[in-house]
Amino acid sequence: MKKLVKSLLYISFIICCFSACNNKKNVQKEESVKSWGEAKAEFVSELSSSDTSSVKTMAFQCMDLLKTDSISQALDMLYTIEGTKLRKLSDEEKIQLKNRFKIFPIIDYKFEGMTFSTQGNNDVKFTYYFSKPENPQDAPKALGLMFNPIKIDNQWYLTMKNIGQSSQEMQNRPTDKSVAPAEITF
Image (cartoon, rainbow, N blue to C red):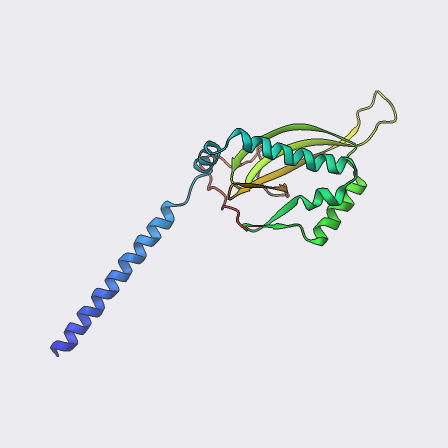
């Protein structure tokens, strides 16, 4: 009987230890959730002028390739986000974008600005013109194009903003108290 009681006490002790460890892990997970404001402050504080220069150079290079009708080369520069994973564009995605730029070719463009927010959510905005006006008094026809540069392991990757991705342009963009987006990885 004494052996049974000792065994039960021993098992109870082990269960309590595992339970305490598990609760500590849950508390750590909850504490690791950052707000959008915290993630932004941390990310932006780590950026340098070379980051700004690298992103701007990539974005302008892509726009110049599109402008000179080197669409395939431009699309080879681009990535996309699937969940929280970064990947190269699929052949189907390239075909869709190629068709878009054939229908609305980039004749000229204007850089509108750049905003850094978090590791996987940033804005580089352009207005691009896809037709010249027949009448000089008319404005050229234009569309907006926004890139989302992503920084992974000190390397920048260029993606295009998708519908639904937040942007500084959005009226209902996340507030500083919103939950920060998950980090993007490969």
